[in-house]
Length: 157
Image 1 (cartoon, helix red, strand yellow):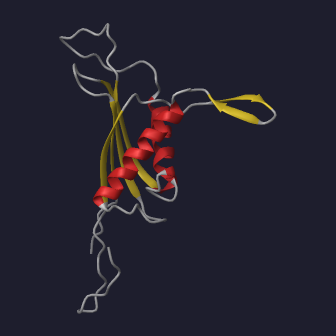
Image 2 (spheres, one colour):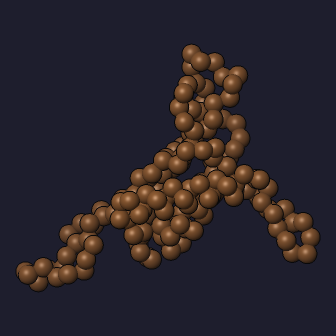
Image 3 (cartoon, one colour):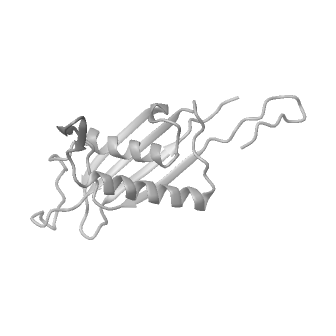
């Protein structure tokens, strides 16, 4: 991505950036914190720290492999997050019901967006101007995790 001026004197258009990654694992919500005393707050979910670390590590590895440098400060980003939740053993193998139980979709998204910020994907998750969220149970033999798709809006002349 460059800011060079073409020979005709017009302004060069920067190609829209995109980052797609699948993070395997058990999606964990980032919810409320509880006060344990002396101004110390602890996450309610014991697994959210590990989940955020998994996201951060996978995203950093993908960025290093693809040469993605992140979305510069002030750049708008559209994000789509698809959560594939572990399939309960009691779920029938013939069909997969909708994921209408916990965890809450907004709390799952909060954990991912914070992990993406710590990975340097963007300066701040306030750059996200569009967000599409889905959650579903894994199909038989499907790996649970989160499919993350980030893109910068197309620039038009």
